[in-house]
Length: 100
Picture: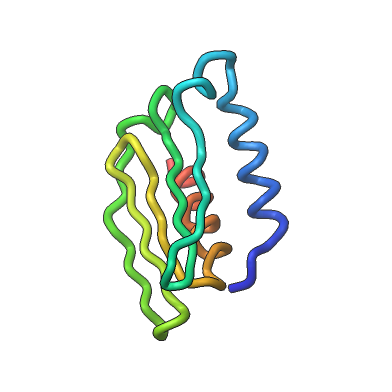
């Protein structure tokens, strides 16, 4: 699934809604690349309404280059995926947040 602007705009809005003068100084979002090649995303949910919410590991492996893996331990949402799977990871986080 190609990255959709809607997911990126949604993530920006979610991040902005967490920034309260304190949260952003301790927690946040890290997006980076990995050498597979691919993406790695860590989103801190501490001190948000999501703190404590868990997500069992979702491991999608469609091919050697089309894969992603996400989960949440109640403190941090973690995702990794192939070079073209950033959109899948962002969508998984959006669904995690929206599933209350």
